[in-house]
Image (cartoon, rainbow, N blue to C red):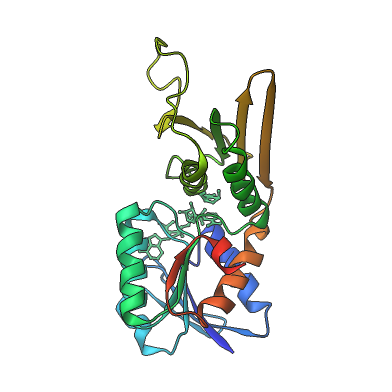
Amino acid sequence: MIKVIISGFKGRMGSTAVEMVNNDPKLELAALLDPFATEKEVAGVPVFNDKADVLSVATDVWVDFTIPDVAYDNTKFALENKICPVVGTTGFTEAQITELIALSKSKKVGGLIAPNFAIGAILVMEFAKKAAQYFPDVEIIELHHDNKKDAPSGTAIKTAELIKETRTYKKQGAADEVESIPGARGAEFDGMRIHSVRLPGLVAHQEVIFGAKGEGLTLRHDSYDRVSFMGGVNLGIKKVVNIDTLVYGLEHLL
Ligand SMILES: NC(=O)C1=CN([C@@H]2O[C@H](COP(=O)(O)OP(=O)(O)OC[C@H]3O[C@@H](n4cnc5c(N)ncnc54)[C@H](OP(=O)(O)O)[C@@H]3O)[C@@H](O)[C@H]2O)C=CC1
Ligand SMILES: O=C(O)C1=N[C@H](C(=O)O)C[C@H](O)C1
């Protein structure tokens, strides 16, 4: 039985993860964390407001769906206390990820930071990396619900990072292009462009559009429901307890 703590358990993803853990007989919900929670327990599971108090119960895996400002500290705290982090919260910097990987290696604790847990999103990233070898002109459009705090999405950043590995650098668009409204061409990452759409009704969606002479290629993934992320979270929880380093991206555990 793997004992799990869920940080951010009242949020959209945290509450879906609680349901997933409760429905898996191989997992046990051992603790819940939210600094603003007033209840002391939920169905017999202790609720903590302060992460230091989580250490009063035995836990193997720390699932984190909170906010960028606290997820880095939470992940560091979990690793330092030999709890394997499975982190979906986005907004980590490259330097933070590098530092956390080094910490995990020194502590010999497994972990996962995954900007996206949906298998279709992982496949789009992999296909995009492959396509960028042949199509250096690419724009990423990510579309999310209007309560999302970070932009661009963690998935869009990771997609751009993977594309960068195979794409020959190119500053896209006309050399003399002008933005008559600032931001019209989106964010620039290594010469390619990322656009963020926020609308009520959306969940999580991404298009990677490649263009070349006389042809185009569009890769699209849609998460219509947060249940789409739960297979990946479940797999992450079960895998991190058997590895001794933190990895960035679910693809490393598939
Ligand atoms: N990797 C993936 O596949 C996915 C990742 N995400 C990412 O997960 C994160 C959460 O998304 P979502 O669930 O939609 O957001 P929500 O705003 O619904 O949930 C975040 C929760 O964290 C709580 N919180 C704030 N501070 C703390 C803290 N210090 N400790 C514990 N909990 C805290 C918030 O409480 P309060 O509201 O009271 O402030 C809220 O309940 C985002 O970064 C998002 O990008 C989302 C979907 C999929
Ligand atoms: O905030 C969200 O909702 C999502 N966040 C992740 C991201 O930033 O990529 C994953 C998914 O897109 C949903």
